[in-house]
Length: 318
View 1 (cartoon, rainbow, N blue to C red):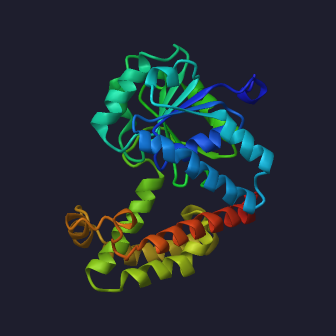
View 2: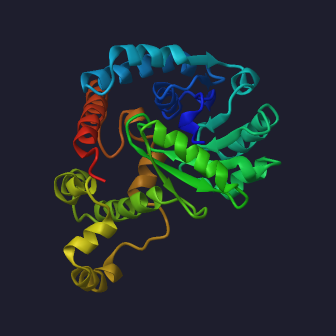
């Protein structure tokens, strides 16, 4: 029997920050009860406000009805008690900060609190699932679920098995994600960075290398992606694009260009310098760009609104 034929199970999301509140919204909109846990009172207090703002964007886009939004909020319970958050959950998604020690400690604590048949997932974006398995006595029910920010908008969820993950749990989580309207992408094995971040950081390495070497400004590097090949990335991936463009042409370009691409094994010097200066991007008000508060709020709202419109346009394209 498919999971969608059963009563929707209780879920727990551990971490109410940037990713956690979006995952909670996603699951609650799909009909699951959600306990959203965070030990930080400020994060817990902010989460409902962030979810409400996101739901309003969905309603403005005509993708969610008012009653569905109200039901979503009603299904989310906030908690600073880890045990109470996990005790009734059949699916637990850890969304703590990207700190290996913190995640290992949290996952170890969670395993002792949940039912024997509960599935435990991590939303890490880069940390090895194999490494995280070390926190658990029973790693057969553990897998990675890598959502993309904003989690309630971007359809892709990467499902990453550990060395001992039971395939039935991959199937179960995949069904839950599909029922919630996501596009689960199943990896055959664990690999650093999974699929998406390996592709994303290959592009970022080249982009930052071009800036480091004075070839173009950050603004123009971004513009060539936004107004060039980036437009078709929502419609086709790099492998399909190669087929459509001609593999003979792709081979010719690769043969000439690949030896000339950035192959540095260390992060960008400009990136390292900015971080050292505390200019860590939008959250600090400055990175490669200046981010005054009003600009940040406007840009974030614009991003989410346009992503929703793009999602509507591309839905059903396969």
